[in-house]
Length: 123
Image (cartoon, rainbow, N blue to C red; front, side):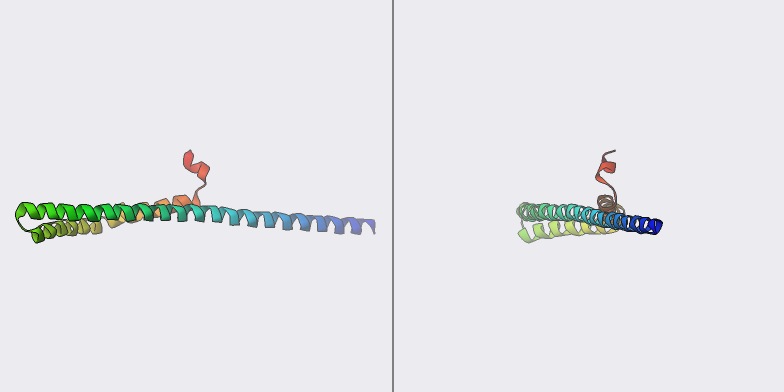
């Protein structure tokens, strides 16, 4: 009888330890996911803020450039047309190189931030 009682206690102890281990691993996975998600979200928000201010600078700089070109050629409308043509050429170039210079680096950045540990990126 004594050995069955010892066996039962050992099994209960083992079950308690396994349950504790699984719960600890689950909590660790949740915390790691939350940390990485917060890192990605904060990077996206920071990027959006910089993009908005950069867009405003680009907008007003483009208006000033178009106005200056228009004054130089004698027609403000022509100045805006030249600036629009420049942006059209830039858009076509960016469209042609989007996979190599935009899509792949952005994907790689997100993959590195989500899948690699912070200590590994410093090595």
